[in-house]
Amino acid sequence: MPCQTRNKTRLTWLALGLLALSLTPAAWAKPYTAAATVGMIADIVREVAGDRAKVDGIIGEGVDPHLYKPTRNDVIALSSADIVFYNGLMLEGKMADVLVAVARRGKPVYAVTEAILDQGGYVMTDEAEHYDPHVWMDVQGWIKAVEVVADALAEFDPEHADEYRARAEAYTEELTALDAYAREAIASIPENQRVLVTAHDAFSYMGRAYDLDVRGIQGISTESEAGVKDIEDLVSFLVENEIPAVFVETSVADKNVRALVEGAKAQGHEVIIGGELFSDAMGKPGSYEGTYVGMIDHNVTTIARALGGEVPDGGFGPGEYQVQSGDTLTSISDAHGITVAELKAANDLNGDSIDVGQSLRIPRL
Ligand SMILES: [Zn+2]
Image (cartoon, rainbow, N blue to C red; front, side, top):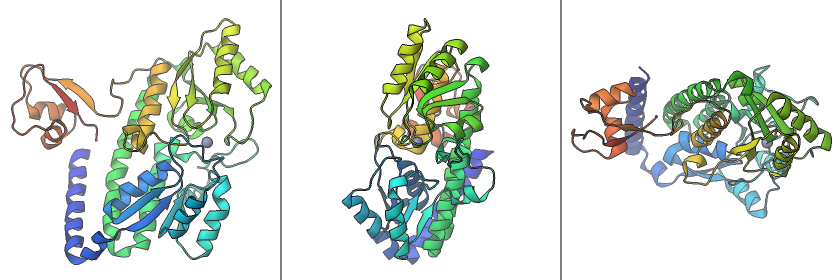
């Protein structure tokens, strides 16, 4: 059962943490600094490094990494960090010079997609053979990035290597469950509507992983402008296939997507904007969408819902359950594949009594 493995991992992890605390108290008192270009990578580093690192995310919420030029402060942050992570595959096109300069000074600098590139055939390209950098859209692909971060931190701080690997393993379990949710959610969309039309080509890995036909108005980098013909072709596609919804992205201007909606309307086909997706940047720091899991959950749930799929109210995130007569904490926990302790923790329950009709939060761990 996955829960048992997870609990075991957590215990091991806790034990390792306590052991490390007693042996090297200085390491806890003084965390090192890890810098990461985009939020999705900063999130992995936070998950894997835990309290051992102070993580500095360079490119913020709603900001497009393809066009991002590093500021003076970014250069300082990258230069003064102890270890640096970036995506690679030309995502951070305008940061390449700084990253190269930092690496030349002997600092550990890692591209999280490096291992993926070594596995021939995984990385996607466009017609002009440019690499598609949006690997995080396939959760299985991002799990490989978690491995890269764990290996890098283990090499950087070998004393705590086991701790990094244990944390990476626990996070990978959560991502594996998210991957299963994404597959199920997308599969619930009627087959003839399983088409994702967005502002730029950020979703090809998602399309390949979860069987979704993906079309972006702009190419894999937002540097390329969309032509009038690109828009016209997509409008015809929407009309002919009676696609009900198109999507905007938080880090890209929405004018091209609005042009699609108006173009389809002029031809008598009503298409709605199905929601705002997180393509190349996560949501607000501190919010659920400000985590990688929340970002993917939001995207998958929004897409599935707008295109006629069936997803739970809370998506992959915490769900609700109304207590029925005869229910016990054990029966509810068993039915949702979680432990009684997890159920009680999610609802701040001290005792074992629950009332019929009471609403309980069901954590999806
Ligand atoms: Zn992009």
